[in-house]
Image (cartoon, rainbow, N blue to C red; front, side, top):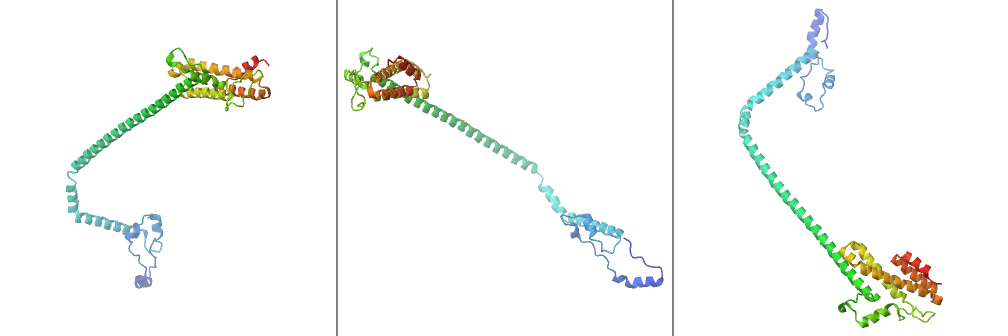
Length: 294
């Protein structure tokens, strides 16, 4: 931007000299104008449109401001030179301090790792003990089931009168034997619904026969829970098989007697078939019906 251009006449020059004091000379550039975080040169120059100043004068002013700032920085360094020197002296020997901190940190890291290893070892030990506890509890439950299984097998053998009489010690008293014999063939209060057959004989007590079937079914449930291939259960298979065949024989007898039950024939037949179904012996029931003489 050029300055105002006036004529060459003396009068005009005289007028310019007289009125030059009234022109709006530009104020010095403020340092704060350059300190804004979002300072933009183009925006800054656009704010200088009202300055009566040439571009070259603006450049000279900016150079002067730069030189002033450089001088101010140099004076600041000179004034604080001793402080800079003392700072350098204070930093001497810092390598040893850093190395000491590093050694302490490594030692702390080793201690933490040692504690972590101990915690992990303890965790594995506790986990192993918990697994052993679970195994012992499982074995204890299996032991209880096996004892229960043995007691129920012995009870059914006694009730069905199929206990092994090979040795006198295992033989049941005569009174128990008579009780067992009357366990199925009975017409007491519990089996009072069983009337005599047409031939005058006493029918099989369906209530007691149902209890025998339920006890046998419970044996099979214990075997399923423990595992049918358990050595103890495998050793008991001959006894259980004899119990099963005896119960099936009683069911077959009850089914044959149902045909002579008069008015209760159908009801007794359905009751016996339900017991067959409870044992899961549908095939045996069909075979018994086929062999039944109607």
